[in-house]
Image (cartoon, rainbow, N blue to C red; front, top):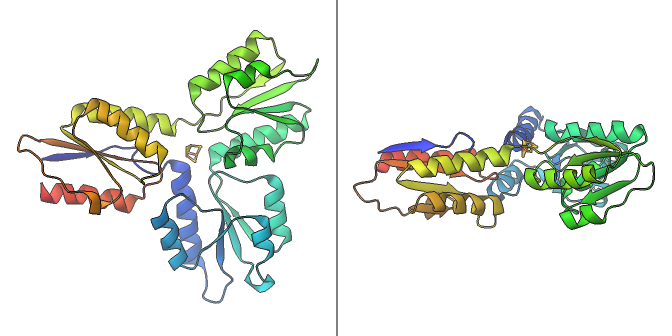
Length: 289
Ligand code: F3S
C-alpha cells in the first residue's frame, strides 16, 4: 500500500517559522539567563504549548501580565505569527524585555503598508473579522482612523467623508472572494484610494491540495485538533471526495481496519498540527498496512 502526504499538510510557513524561533531561542539560552516568554500562545495546539512549557517557556496573555513579572525575570518575549500592535512592542521594550519578532512576513508587510499609508494621511480599512488578534494588531500600526469591514452589509453601510482617501487591506486568512466583493462595492461607489490584496493563500492551497488528493486515494486521513475549524473544513472537503475519510487528533485515535482492496492512502493535516504527529501517523500507516 502506498501513502501520500499532502505537501502543505500542517503548519503554514508563518506558524512554522514562529515555532522554530521559540525552539532556537531555547537552544541559544544560557542556564542563568532570564526566561523566554511568548506573547499569547504561539499556536493553538496543547501539545506544542505543553512541550514549550517543559522547556521553561511561559505565556504572557497581556501587557498587564508582563508588567507583573519581577524585573530580574524579564527575559525575551517572542511575538507570534499574528503580530501585535506597535505600542505593545514598545511597551514590552520599555518594561525591559528583549523582543524577538516572529510576526509572519506576510503580516508584517500589512503593518508596513498601514504604517506608511496612514502616515501619508489615508484612512485605513481592514477587511477582516473584528476582534481577531491579527486584525487588532494591524489596526495598531495606523496613525489615522481605522475601520474594520467583516461583511458585505458593513461594506454597504460604510461611508467615508467627502475627500477622505482610503487604503484598503485584508486580514491574511480572510476569504478572498469576500474580499473581492467588498472591494467591488467600494469601486462601484467610486471611493478614493488604494487597495492592496493581502490575503495569504496558504489555507486555500492546503484545501485545494486536500481535495485533489482525496479524489485520488482509497482512504484519506485528516489530522488535527477536535476544536480546529480549519481541520474540520479539511475533513468535510475530503469526505466529499473520498467516503473512507478519517478525522483523528493523534495516532492514538487511529484504529484502522482496511479492506484488502485499499491501495492508496492520503494524509493531510490542519494548520495547527505539528510535524511530529503527522510523521508518526505516516510511519505507522506505512509500516502496518
Ligand atoms: Fe500563515 Fe503567514 Fe499566511 S501565518 S496563513 S503564512 S500570512
